[in-house]
Length: 323
Image 1 (tube, rainbow, N blue to C red):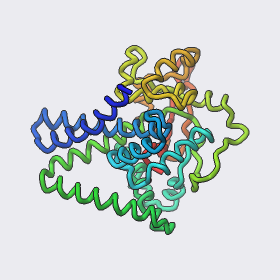
Image 2: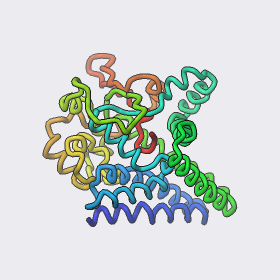
Image 3: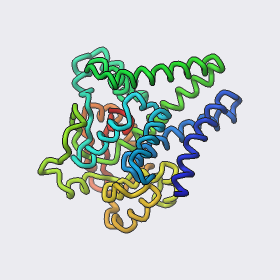
Image 4: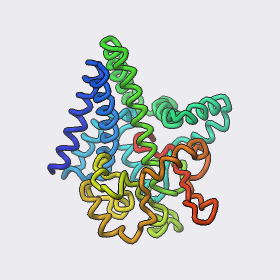
């Protein structure tokens, strides 16, 4: 219980403290606040992931309540925790990277929007993720989903009021908060990009029954899953992101809590060194393939010459925070 209490408490209290420090202002103070906001938004996503797998509490309802609160903190509250959780469980059970909106087809049919998105993505602005959020907010109004419409309107009302209040108190703080949230989205997509080489599939209805196709066996899952560790030399550094990079261990034991994953990794993944990719090695690939991965496959590219290292294109639009 103690690691969970510390992580949950730090996420909520640290986020509030970060916003206060941004308002107080001053070079060093604002810098600390900025880092706190980025880090707590990041942890809110990974704690929400734990809630999806029900590893924190004894009751499903407690996980749902915490997951909903975390979704409001990290900006995914418009989507609804239960829908996000069901999407993620399709990822595990069906061994795919599911999305409910074909953003590639949308961009292919709209060259002007595609040009803007590609220009922003070139500069590492997460335009695809922002597009998915806008589509997620618009969908309940297009589909006649009354409950979804009410949720989106509540979310927009609270967000608009909070934004107006912060703008009244301090415009620089509002600008820094927006920048911090964008940085957190980029960090989310960096870790998400290199966990799998699964197929991305459009799954319009996350209420569909679970079940992988015949070729997506457990061996397929093992062979297409990677761990992108913050550091292999200093494993405790992975606590900075709640051990989320131990992704092979997580897929082998998805019901095990975050603080036990290093032990699972040592016991079950010691024979898979090729599946552990340190972050330092992936930064160049994250930058190099930032445009290619938008329309390509999240493949591992063989070395260009003998003795060279393979490259990893990676995925986009597979975030825990978007439908």
